[in-house]
Length: 199
Image (cartoon, rainbow, N blue to C red; front, side):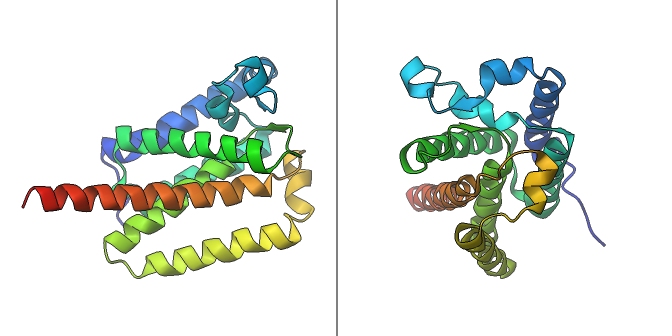
């Protein structure tokens, strides 16, 4: 029997992310006027855009897909979620993605959407699976590598861009996956360090 992670600390993080995204969507186009991640964020000192841009979406289909992604990840890895830790990791992943796009993807002049961060949360969850000795973690990582690698080689295709009325920033998926793996490994090493200190 499938048991969903229904304790508050397990679902509050994704719920908060989802609510912020929905509120931002309801206030469009004003939300995008102020909070979209633009390439000029550094020159204009709009550092908040490193995070806020990830909560915006181009249309209803775009936000629906991303909210479904959050929901699926909660069902898959929610047992490992703790509200403050989840939100902190989510924000760090958003910031790393934004900085990587600024440095390595100059063709991306603006960005919205949770998909990059969702890839990061997924990657972090895979590391937690490995730490918890779940062999499925390796299968999920392999699947993630295949997906992100295919996007880098062949792009996102034409179906999704038509649905969300925008190009899919596949680089954000790559940076998200890498940042999530990094966050996961650092968290793992931190836990092992504290465990050794307490012995």
